[in-house]
Structures are given as C-alpha cells and as structure tokens.
Length: 160
Ligand code: S3P
Image (cartoon, rainbow, N blue to C red; front, side, top):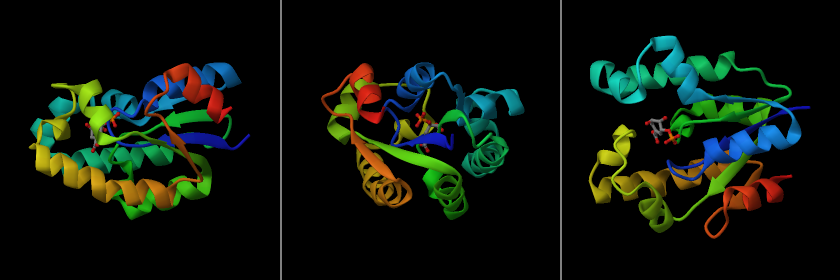
C-alpha cells in the first residue's frame, strides 16, 4: 500500500496520530524529526542552535528522501512544506493528509513549549508562518482532516 504522510503545523498532532494510525493499520511508523536526530546525533533544538535552520532543512530533505514510500506512515516536521522539492516528493510518493488545526487551539496545546525553536518566535511571526504555510499544506495534501475538536482516536478513525 502507498505510504501515508501526515503534514501540518507544529502541534497539529502528526506524531500522536501517526503512531496510532500506523498501529491500527499494522504499518511501520517513521517521523522525519526523529530520523534527523538519529542521523545528526543532536536534538532538534541543538541542531538549530549549532548549525542553523538551513542545515536543519538540508537534513530534513535528506531523511525524507531516504524514507520508505510503501507500507508506512510518515509524520513530518511542520516546515517540511517550506521546500518545493519536498512538497513535490510528498505528493508523488505518498497519500498526503493535512491535519488542520486552528492556531488558537495550537497555542493552547503548545503553550510555552521549548522543544520547537520556531515556536519561540514572536506572536506575529508565528502567525505569519501559520498563514503562509496553510496554503502550502493545502496544495500539498490529498486530504484535509480537521483536528480542532477531536482527540487522537477520533482523528485516526476519520482517516481510516
Ligand atoms: C518545525 C517543526 C518541528 C521541527 C522543527 C521545525 C517547523 O516539528 O521539525 O522544530 O519548521 O515548523 P513539529 O511540527 O513536529 O513540531
């Protein structure tokens, strides 16, 4: 079966949903951020602070292209859609699902999360990032799932 890839903003539930979805479908689960951490031997915040966002994005594109494309659920980092190359790759190789969550809801979920470097940016900058990426998620995805008032189990059920 063609792989399923989950995209969406930070805090939209890609990892939790991906794990449960893979479990339900008895497929492997992979996460691009986790693979980056394994390959570079650093946590995402360490990689951002020591090498910067550009190098992080290079790793991201590299691990994306190393992932299997069949019988797998792949959850991606929120910025995977920043590169056109990644958008094209995802669309061609996966059934892409956009987990669509309002920024208000994400703000409540993430609050003062410190593990996501781009979440530390100012309120306006995060809002601009959210608006700009929203279009990219929509045009990359084959399906859009609203995750605002749904828990992980309900989102997984809808995808199934
Ligand atoms: C990022 C999102 C993060 C992680 C990195 C950059 C982004 O993943 O890849 O901090 O650019 O939005 P999550 O979407 O899993 O938080």
